Length: 552
Image 1 (cartoon, rainbow, N blue to C red):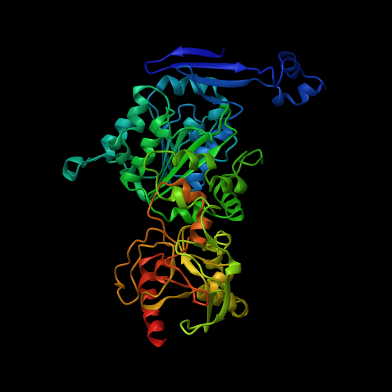
Image 2: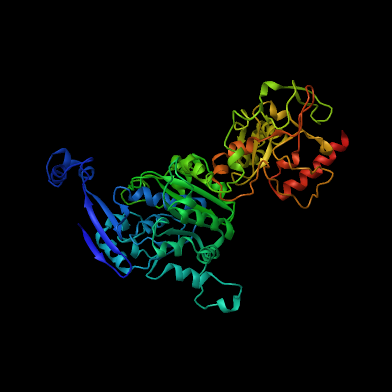
């Protein structure tokens, strides 16, 4: 036992533990000697695992410290373009603060911890958690860094007092008004903890609204959601994870525009640990779905160096971030077990062998009288109504990410030689593909199969589409008011939906079905109006389709 103390808020127990499955006391004692033994030369391999318990619940371990806190902090920090002001709710051990202080852009971080004894005990007994001595420009104790404002008060009251108002702006004015934050990190109780304060944090729409208001317009909220579900678990609503279900629903309700669920399995809790990032502005998707190379470059450019010369991060890197971009399948299965599950649970989980599908061998390319390109796609045999259209190919489009498109545009504009080489690629991308913003920014996807030859059906003559309810045509469309299509390529109506997040390539690649029986020899026609991804694109698309259809 390292320390055991009862505070006004909780019981703190800290132990050094040697698990007999991983080591033994004799090896640890040998590691303390100053000799040539293997143990003493590799002392870190034999040290005990320091464990922190609050009210008997494991909160952190020295073996899992970096993995847990890097996963909590850095995905959100790198998803923001330039995080200068950060708030931490809880985090009394100091490790969340330590990771935030690694960022060059940081100007101010406010750590709000209700238990002053927890901070004092951590400062004395958890040096690994709050040691910033190796970060260039910081201090020995992270709590003493000049960029840090450690406030020993109730974070719930802090945000409600400063950022929750019910429309009375005059009464809310205060000469000590707190500026909004770029990132808010909620490192408090686990949502499954069966205590009243957990409900106050996770089942409190006023508190969540105050967090939303406490963010800048491009602000990001991140919180830990406890142990990850298993594939055979019931829905969160029906288990002790009900607070996780409630807060994800509330985050959607208060106005966040992009929500991302991920997990880390090296935290030392036995089970993988889950986290949630919520962005007020969907532009964060551009950085959330950054490539491995882009993330590695951002780490190099945005992280403070260390005095020792060692890498600032142990677990988080580009490959790790890419693993966070797609939720685990268990999140999808548990999400779809809830009552009144979203419709995506029935159609967006990949190719269903039980559902009729017209494979690519059902079609051929021929001369078209309706396409301005002069060719189109035709059915070689009868296709029954409701059949999927080449779903075996739908998840394999040629993907031009927003960064790839930006590079192509830059080459085209600034390098004449590169422009000559890039022009055919740009033409192929824009004329055969469709624009989408699902990955943030403006990307393009081109069908990699003969589906790329499908033309637009003028005046409502389309016979396939992802949304059978769509009746709009280029003649009835209002160029200034784009509708929201249920299954449109390039957009999504829902915010929190791990099914969509897990199947973005399938969503982008197409979910087209035959709207009626299609006879052999008939041309396959889609409704290009459902390929829209922005208001500006909509207006241009309506104009272009009207012109093309008039010329037919």
